[in-house]
Image 1 (tube, rainbow, N blue to C red):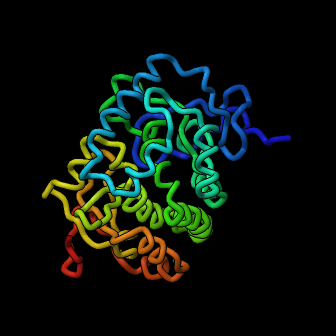
Image 2: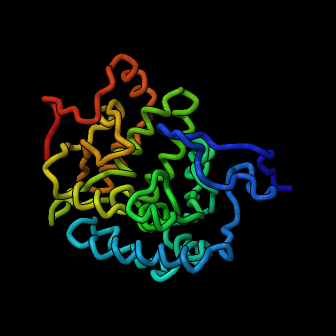
Image 3: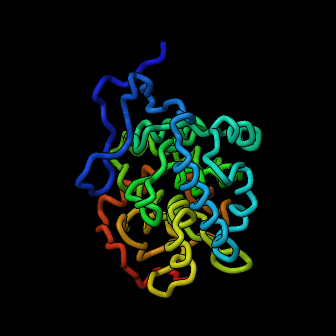
Length: 290
């Protein structure tokens, strides 16, 4: 029998918020102990599908010259542009490509649950979509952010392997009390990473790719620092959750990202205990600016 979350269970709240996280985490006993649930496709309204369509149209127009080549190539694999896709249809293609699948969750989930899903090649996708009033900005991830921003690159084998390794590393970091340090690396790579390609800087982070404003800012604005990725440097650096990033870390390719994050981070965490945290807008003399 599948274990169900106890009545009244709630997820961890990340960052600073004066309201509880959105999402129905009970659903009459339909949320499992790993926080996954069925995508209730019948619950989406015509307005929900229209929000997804408008978001997709706006964001896809912006991608040329700003998004990395791998993302643009993989995006059509999401399928439907005019309405919210069904997860099982995405999984038919995704599993064949890299062995991954997307699973529905009611919203933000605790760290261990999140890491465990990634380690098992399952990407958690919030199954609700923002309201019209949140069209330009939403506080926490919704289905558009998770699907459009994250899932296309899971069709890339090297990136998909990196995500699985990140999940395994996250479980170890939790045991070592180092989740905050690893979460900063995730933030500055998976969510807000830039990559240098032959045609210039491009975005691969989901938080950038799913935001019309930050996509242009991250690649073109001179108001933020862009420096070569250094794992320890990123793990020391605090980040903003309510504004454009003041620092972006740049990689030269996904294989480089995979190689840089492949080592056991236990020694990194030990070193970080003796190093001060850095404000989000810090620029060090040792930083390699790009």
